Length: 189
Length: 189
Image (cartoon, each protein chain N blue to C red):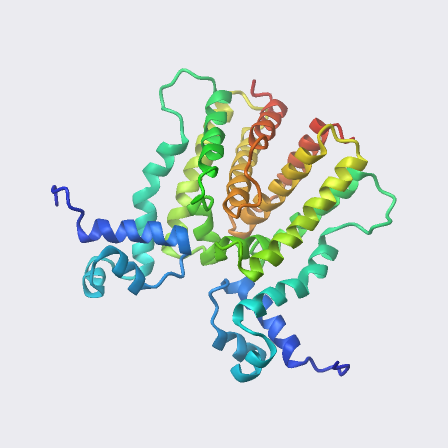
C-alpha cells in the first residue's frame, strides 16, 4: 500500500471518476477520465477491469464521506426527530453550493437506467443505508408506521436533491416544513 | 403538411428521439436515432439544426400528451383536493409499468446537467406548467401557503417518479398518504 502523500494512480482514477461523472454524467469517456487522473489507459485497465468497474469503485470509495456529510454522530443525545431533521438541514446547506448537482447516487441510477450495472448496485446499497437510518430513527421515535415514514423521508430526500440539482428549487423554506409535517403525522415528536 | 397515415421523417425522428432517450438516456448517438427512425443523417440535419434541437423538439412534441396523461379534465366538477390527488393516482398507475423510467422531463435535466441546453429549457417549462397547475389548485382550495404547497407537491412528484423509475420503490401505499398529509397540513380539505 502506498503511504506517501502523493496519490496513487488508483486514487487519482477514483477521484477523477467521482468528480467528472458528478459534473458531466456517466457518459464521460475513458480518455477524459485517464487524462484528468494523469494515468495511461493501459494503467487504468491494469487497475480496473472496465470503466463500469471504475465507476462502481469510485461510488463505493465516496460512500463513507456521503454518510458522514449527512448523518448525525451515532452517539449524539438528540431525539430521533432532531436526528432526522439534521439530515435534511445538511441537504439544504449543500444545495446552496453552485456546483451542487443533486445526489450522485440517485443521478447515477437515473443515468445508467440499468439496475444490474455494478455502479447502480453500489448506489442502491448506499441509498438503502440512508433509508435504513431513517427507518431506525422512525422506530426509535415510535412512528405509527416506521416503514411508511422511512419511504416518505427518502422520497423527500431524493425529490429535494433532484430539484435543487437541476436548479428548479433552492429548497429555502421547503424541506423543514415538509419533513416536520410528515414527522408530526407519523407521531414522531 | 403530410396528411397521409405514414409518418413523415420529422415525425419518425421525433418519436425515435423521445423513445430512445427515455430508454437509454440523452447520450444516445445520432446514428442510432437516424437508424431507429429510418432517416438518413443528411435528412436529419436538414430537418433539425443539431441533435440538441431534435431532443428539445421531441420533448416539446410530447408535452401535451404528458399533461393529458396526468391532469384531470379542465372542467370536471371535482374539488381542488381531488384534482391534485388525481395527478398522483396517475403517477402511481404509470409507475407500475416495467418500462417506466420516471419522469422524462426530470431525467433529461439530470442527465444534461446544463440549464441552458435547449432540451433542459423545454423540460423546465413543461414541469413549470405542472407546478402552476398545483399552485392554481392550491389557491382554489384555499391552502394556507399555496406557494409552499405547490413546491411540496412537485417535490413529491419528482421524488416519487425518480424512485419508481430506478425501481427503488413501487409507490404502493406511499403517495396517497404523503400527499393527503401535505394537503391536510395546508388546510386543503
